[in-house]
Length: 152
Image (cartoon, rainbow, N blue to C red; front, side, top):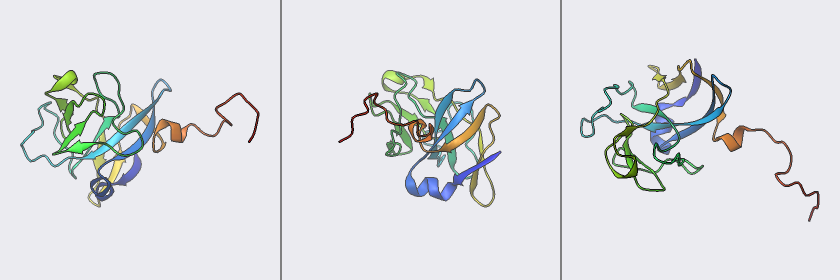
């Protein structure tokens, strides 16, 4: 288990992005989003919302692997995650999409829990925490991206 952030931070900022390594050693991004399961959108996947009002999803649309959070936060409206490329909307509590290009798909989930004190903890055995932020933020500094050694 790895402490990530607090549920209060996720609600105040609207989302929280972090990087994980899967069991095959591949990096992936995960978003934490507020989930206020009011019943309007329901938990259509049959997966109950976590206690504490936060859910975790892999940071990409099921249609074309478009990242939701590109470093500026997850676009959301009325409890739904919006794909910035095609506008498909995913329920933040269930991960289910009932419209657009990604209709009838569900976002891959990442197991978390919210402690009584509001701390969000990564509990998914399939992933190891790498760091806060996106993959590009966590790859380390390997020098310049260009092969040119010319400086200005």
